[in-house]
Length: 134
Ligand code: CO
Image (cartoon, rainbow, N blue to C red):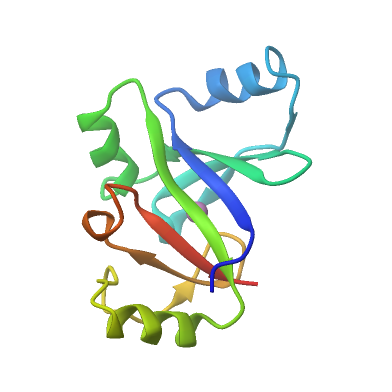
């Protein structure tokens, strides 16, 4: 059901430093910071030949990334995103098998303008999974 790895998201305590590290030390193609107020993040996209990395930094007081960084002050992998062809079909198949969807279960528009939803990390080996319809 899941397809390509769309991106890996990493929460970072210093966005400028992380972006400079990926561009400089790691020699990656790094974009400018973009505010995503609906998701409570500022994101820098790192383009790799086969996928993307998103460097996430808190935006606003209710940011989920702020809570993550409280627990992991040096940062860490926040979620992985897998592509699906039909997000409603994927959700229904997962719910039928007992997986929990975060929030009200309805897909919302993600950082790339496509429908996304998140699966409960306790159901997936401690890993927060984002599904994105491409
Ligand atoms: Co994501």
